[in-house]
Image (cartoon, rainbow, N blue to C red; front, side, top):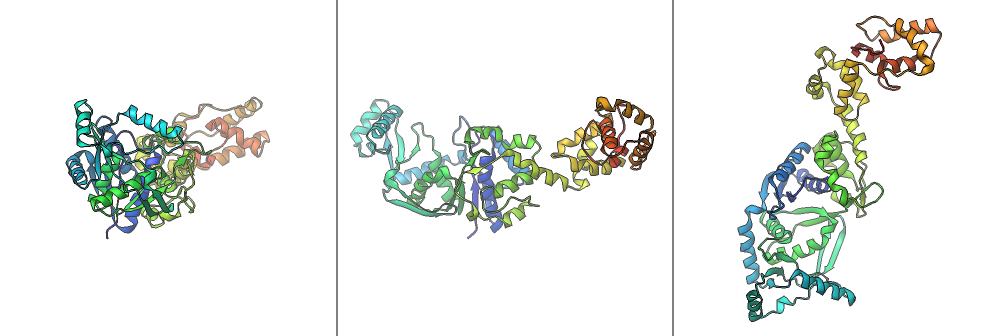
Length: 441
C-alpha cells in the first residue's frame, strides 16, 4: 500500500517552527517510502482564513524544498462533509444539541465543584422530538455532537507507544456548529479517510482528538491511519514557547538569513536520539529519518542553534552558487573569486557579504589606539602605492618592522585595525588585493 501523509495547516497565519516540525516529519515519511505528501488547507473558518496566508504557506514550503503531490482545500469539500454528516445521523452517531455556551459553562463549573471531570452529560441526546421543536421555537439553533462508544480507545503510537483512553472520560465532540461550520475534528476525519492517508504525525496536544477521530473514522467505515504524536517545543530554558511562536515564523527566520538545509537539519533531529548534523540534501534527511527515535519529553528549541548550521552550510557553497549575489553587490568579475574565498569563512549568513564588500570598496573607519598613533602614522608613510597584491602585506610589515623595531602582535594588530577597523578577520595577505580604499590615508 502506498504511503500517504499530509500537512494540514489553517491559513489563518504564517507557518512557524512548530508547524514545520509537523510538516517535515510527515514529508520525510512519505519521501523515504516513495509515497505521496498532500498539502491540505484547513480553511473552513472563512472569517479567519485568508489567501495571503495560504500563499505564504506555499512559499515557505517551496523555500524549504518540501514539495507536495497535490493541494486540497477543505472549503471546496463542504458538500462532502454534509453528505457524511447525514450518513452518521442515519447511523445514530450524530445528535443535535441546544445548550448555550453559558449553560455549558455552568455545567462544567458545577461538575468541577463536585470533584467530577467536566464531561458533557448528554442531556441533548435524551431530548424528545417535542423538546427539540420547543427549543427551535425559542429561536435556538442546534449544533451537532458525535456519539462516542464509551469503551476504551487504543492504538500503538509511533512515538508515545501504547495509548489507551477511556471514551467515557471524554465529552462527545462538537463537530458542526450552530451556524453550520464544520469543525476540524470532523472535516479532518472525513478527509483522511477519503484521501487514503496512511500515516499522521502531529503534536502531543492532539492525543485526545486522535481518540475521538479514530471512532469517527471507524463509524464512517474507514481505517484509521498510523498515528504518532511528537512532543511540543519549549524555549531554550524549558519555558513555554507557544506564545512566542508567532515571532518564530519561517518568513522571519528566512529574513534573518537562515538557510533551508540548516533549518531542516535541525528540525529533522531535534528531540530524537540522533545527533543534529547538517545534511547535504532532503533525500539524506529522509534516509536517516526514523519517527520512533523521537522522545516524549518537551523539546527545547533555540533559534540561535540555526546559525552555526547556517554558517557551516554557507561556508561549503561553491562560487557558482553565490556568483549572482556577489555580482549584485557590485564586486568586479575579476575579484569575485578572491572576494568569496576571503569572505566565506568570515560570515554566518549570506547577507553578511554586503558588509565585507562595503569595507573593501569604501574603506573602514580606522581603529587606532592612542599609544599607537605615532607608530601608525609612520607605518602609513611606508605603505606601497596601489594596486596591491597578496605580497603587499608581507612587504609592508617587513618595512615597518625594520623602521620601527616593532614585531609580533604589536606590529600586526595596529596595522590590521587601521586598514579594516577590526581586530580580527581574514588573512591580511588576502585582504590587501581587495581593498579599494583606505580611509586612514
